[in-house]
Image 1 (cartoon, rainbow, N blue to C red):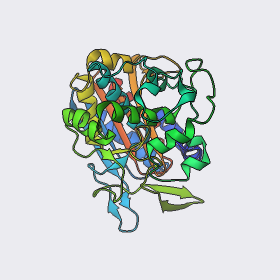
Image 2: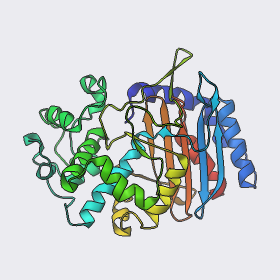
Image 3: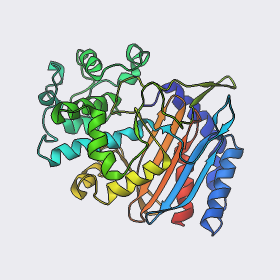
Length: 349
């Protein structure tokens, strides 16, 4: 989930550090990565962790900034951050796992797998939701939903199902957080378990994730407090999500867990290679299912960014090189994606 205010802050901060991409890359990767990171920090990037792994082994890991501006505690490499829309690939993988088990089909009408009546969504399929082509309004654009915290998914679904679709399902692409909230609810209905329990038992355990979960009160120990910058002043961001156990953007994690997830996902330990291929195929506007698909230096780059109040994230995977780059920040306007791509360029060169 990415609010308009957060996006505006990111755009302003990204403009400050855009020149980092033109840095000369030393031939020694770690030296080059340090130089890039120092340039970003010198241009105003604050608070975060970066990790670069090649061939299944971390080669570069740095923590910078403070986790708590009141106490001055420095960020540690294993600190917890919210990861925003990076959550979507976990939701998509959960759906694919149920499809593999024959519990649902991607072309099933979503209404078939919801307890809530959704007459306006009769033509919407699970595939439409995965690919952002459902036409269902994005709840992050609606003040009445974004002003609340820990809204139950079924409550959100009931409210939004009364609204007209913005276009005929499948007609076009429109990035939609609501679709992934609905998919989380589908996972609950089909599996018979709470969404968080299903992820923990079916996905997290297989990938060896130890410090990944849904945001809730009280916040977990060892988190980096997210901060918002307004008029030159920093203030703590709310830890709570708009929607409880939202499949759109309510997970927290660590850089090490995100690296472990990428290794497990691409090794076929979480879902089948065929299911992952479906997720990592571009359908509309560089989007697959919970992933975006690009190219960099002639290599496939499969990734997703995340941006919620007080946090930014980018997790990029270059599957043909077995290269993973993770950037997590508690800086409200961190250009995490630009930094991740610049770090990747060192290893790709």
